[in-house]
Image (cartoon, rainbow, N blue to C red; front, side, top):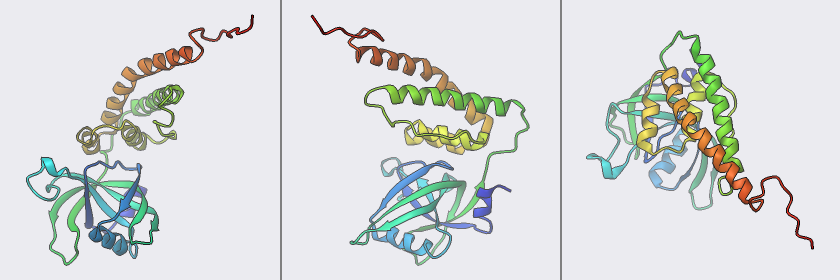
Length: 234
């Protein structure tokens, strides 16, 4: 049993916060809480486990006024919370573990509460997964470094530690800043190796292009003379 599954041991229902975004396990996400019902949610979980479910919901694409059942979400754990004078709050959350939304429960709470089941990636016995994970990590570092060197892109890619394959696959997927629908596809995958292969493909296509752009940007900032010093004297 993982540390993530330990956090939800014995839990089969969650308050649900529908948002037009996808949260990955291990991903950090700041949120601004202003609606009264979600202020109440935050107050309620502050006295228990500080966990709530974050489910993708885009009203313009939905027939219902809430996320559909049998869809995938991610448990968010509140790590930091600062209440403002007017009752709003700024919180910092981290993704813990994924869940499948089974059904909504009738409660007196002003927010959605759902019965859920938690799941993680399938156990895979593949000696090549570790090597693939290391390749993904090195490729990501190259892309991140090149992006940091480009003007206007500093800080676009977060620092990611070398982690276990499953955790790394989620962190790199989160760093791509994908549209919610595409990011959701990574969230619902249950193969660590499959997720790593997808991000490896994206990184492989990106690394040469980004490094070349960074090289051109560096040359342009030296007036096209690469590493040569420019003599401005008589």
